[in-house]
Image (cartoon, rainbow, N blue to C red; front, top):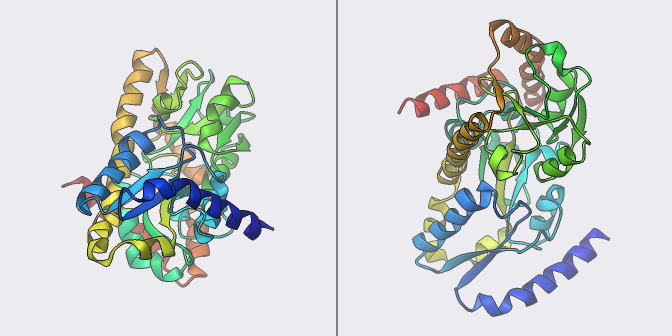
Length: 341
């Protein structure tokens, strides 16, 4: 049933874009499900689309859909079936399919969005690509956001016990598990639903990064932010492409297209989170929000409670034939080296 409906949608989309296709040799459709004001569009994929056009001398053009053709958890299916050419997704939306992203979803792993994203891509090339967890689509890049914390409507989080009974939105996968381990109740939902959940009183808090204070317009809904060094969590994002769509790119400009994927795109995305996150943090402070940085005792509580996450991922990735401790050490070393440049 799903195959039939998706095939029909692909035909309709092709017809709708046929007039615009003549303007460039290759037009790639990017399914867009995040608000157009989000940094993903303004600071990452909008500029990336311009860069693609630049390096290919206008032979490749990326066109964003006006509305989402499929919901966030079905991005990878739509890419596999050729409904769309390009998509952004979150590994945590399809936890039954992926194992390797858990390394970046665990707590305390990110120095910054940019350093962590570059290190993550390098780890993907060195360790994770042979696992084949993205077979069926062409993976263009992986990246993470800046270290994640917790925004609350009004509850101050100054010790572990303060999480008890708090109803918190989190984005699936590792976020949900961290949330539960801290003692909060989990409402698993994609980030774009955050405003509605907070505004309607469905949740008391949300796992978020500082940029979200601006990009999801949360300034009137939250008054406290817990800023944890290294992050309480991180989300693993990936950019993918339909293989047939990639084959449509003229061979002469494929190397140019490839040059702005991989590490280039990882650094662009992670760096954007860092820059907009700094603006979000400044806006929180200027707006009177309480920004809490854990003291030594609170940090020790968090580290003790969340310590099993690393051991759990190491055990799971061992079943795929990888030494997880080696991978973690590699990512941390690559981050430190990149951040020190």
